[in-house]
Amino acid sequence: MARNFNDSFPSKYLKASDLGGQKVAVQITKVQDEQVGREKQEKPVAYFRGKQKGLVLNKTNCKKIAAITGTPDMDAWVGVSIGLYETETEMDGETVACIRIAAVQKDGKPATPPPPPVVEDFHAEDDDVPF
Image (cartoon, rainbow, N blue to C red; front, side, top):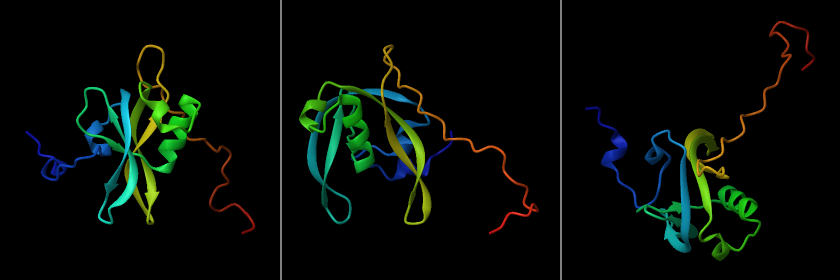
């Protein structure tokens, strides 16, 4: 059986690796402010029905939930179903795994996040492009 080093460092909060590459639909049961991180900053944490770990919400994920629910009022988010998925972001100049929020389809599955835009018609490296 393969051992994942993340299992040796359990966390009170949800991490991208906890999703195991799955897209997961969850229902918000509460959002409360908690002291998190080394510097004990107060951040909103969303908790979900049937799940032990909460998700520390950053501004990006708060904006997404607000867009899904139609309100920035975190108390109004209770009872709303959202999708969680793993992706990557830049932090301190490094690419790191993160959790992002998606709307949930009517069948209860997370809506597939839109793919990144594709830029076509790249010039070859040896083309005369003035820069």
